[in-house]
Length: 179
Image (cartoon, rainbow, N blue to C red; front, side):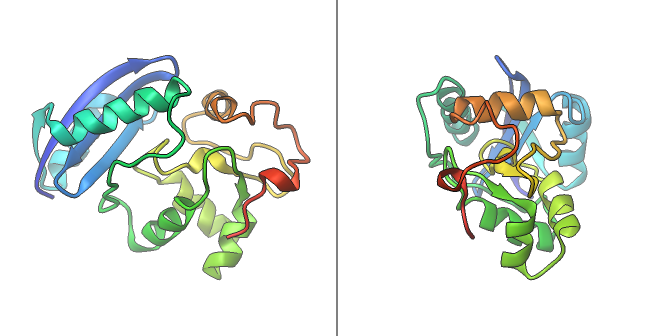
């Protein structure tokens, strides 16, 4: 890892930590996930030199603010998945094809990767770049919310931004994304 700029932001969905460098946004975590200081320590242990602010993290923060305000549907900020393990990187890259307002299931991701839904669930749950890599768009096969490492209330709030807030089983084909 190289030089990374970081910042914390307080938003309607909670406090966020963002970190980005030359290769893109590498961390977008909710304070409830690990705590800001623990996340910063994790980045330093990975070999990153941290400094507050910077153009890359500022761009990411602006896009996240616009998304949370309902003004942005597609992120343009580059994403750096170097904090994820190789299998998780593959799953998360595939997940990035699920667009705003679309949903997929753990089973569909698993079929696309040729692996088990539990393995996909672990990869999705380890996502270091929440929101931008849309792990909130993955639901259980029966249409229920499934899990979310930051809590189901937060997952509901993010889905609400995308028009899926009433999700309660039976998510329709127009919302389904085949991978």
